[in-house]
Length: 279
Image (cartoon, rainbow, N blue to C red; front, side, top):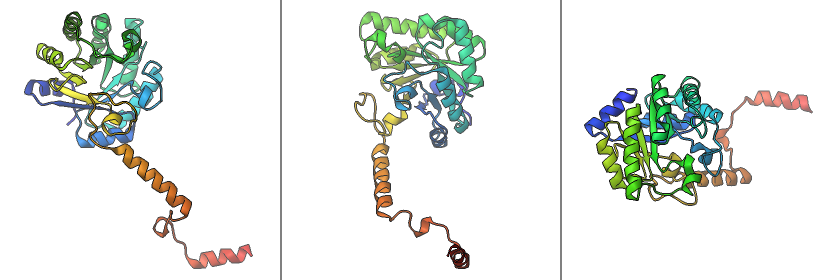
């Protein structure tokens, strides 16, 4: 059954945890969909894990549309959410609606996601009024990395915690259908989750949220270097890929690949006739 805004809300109401993962291509999205994940996020994290940027800021609308369209073709049942990249909604409400519409119309997304609290409520209202579901994003918002001075946990002081609660209530009032809570203390996320009637999706926000989201390269062990504290590696696919690629290189160089079972046959009469013609 297709996951929708309504089914995600029912999951919150019934206590059924929402599962969300990032994906950026057709093949990965299809596998996730077959496994039964509730939602797939085409995150602007693709800037780092797919395009090799230092952060999400260089990602363009064209990048997001391209990857969203690929994922949408592979996601039959999952609720597809596409990130609105940096500067696609901050300049004006009109820009926000136009760009959100492109992710739905050209990318095939079911909803868009944007970062920020009270300061983006006008954009949320306008996008929702255009019949486009909006997922909000509070806490550690990666597009604000320069303003934050790095990727830092948010909401640890009383004033900042109060601001996050107020922002959550305002984006709900503006019409958001769900909110991602990233990089905030678990107990604060619990408070926000209980105050909202819309689902909360946590990433580095504890298990009191209504659901969880992870970057799939992180949770499958495809990334190297620093691993955020909130990431659990559910498989070591990266190590398996490295072993397979190493074996391929070795067998190709030594001549054991391709073996007989990997080749196509032809009648000897055909070859004998060709050899006569070549003499």
